[in-house]
View (tube, rainbow, N blue to C red):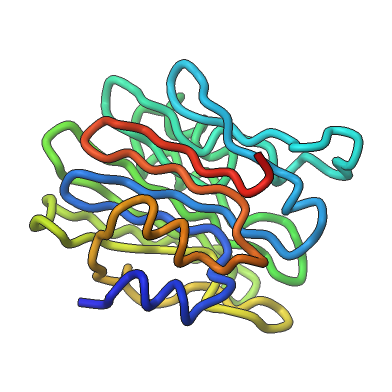
Length: 208
């Protein structure tokens, strides 16, 4: 099992990441450009959404303004894009994501990462990424996990040109406390963090 805090300290740019454990869910966004960094998380009735910290500096909202988290009757949806709404509307995690693909932001073709956490503790993780000009859709289903353990998936492996997509199975990690995760994220690149621990939601915003 990987020490999640050490992983974050040694990986300054994993992009956007989702971690799911037995009693907690974490979702963070990072940014390199001024447009990506000009964001905050704000609470909604059923979860959170991204917003511009300074609306006058927003350039292109198409891939950076969305609802990352929505609570539904079937479970908690967490994603890095507007596929959150696709999953909610379909009511079926896999069927919804079979209609979507990676983001159209050449040359990076940012993967879409998604999670569905069910009331019984089971959860699914997915990544949709570009491979050889086509969309590779990967799904990972878990019947829950042990106390203190979680599984992590992100958009990128690190820096590069183009940015290298996450590959392999979700990383088996330790699940530290929210404040520890926020502190471990790279100071220059971190933007916002959502945490849900046993139903208690916290939001961390760098620019608020």
